[in-house]
Amino acid sequence: MKKQTSSLFAVAILAITLGFSSCTETKTAETETVAEMATETAPPDMDAVKAKIQERENTFAIAQAAGDVESLIALFTDDAISMGNDQETLVGKEAIRADMEASAAKRVAGNTVSFEVSEVLGSEDLVTEIGFSIDKNATGEVISKGKYMAIWKKVNGEYLVYRDIYNYDAAKK
Image: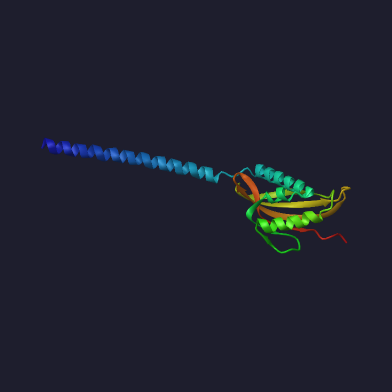
């Protein structure tokens, strides 16, 4: 009888110990899940994202004015798609590079472009930008204005153009 009571006592202790450890593990898992959810649902600082995208657009404008195709193409993902004004859709970095090379060859020395990021939406890793562009000649006279939308994808910590579409405003009559 004493041996049977000792065995029952040992089984009871084991059951209680297992019960407590499973509660502890569940609480830890629940705590980790809540922490992960808080991290995932924290809204990105879109003002900081907008400032970063504006920096990228400024880099783009400088490279475009210089005809620096390598710096321009470095701002695009490998699978980027560009839908430009009055042209066919360009799919992939190499198609975009060929178009940039042709544009650079025709670029008038002294002409500049500027981009103004008007709005950004989305997440920190995938951002839709809405913006406006102004092209000026060497004397600073505005020669065209346009608008665009770009989707920027964060790749290895840097924003790269994943998709873009742009067109120029109609000439004033």
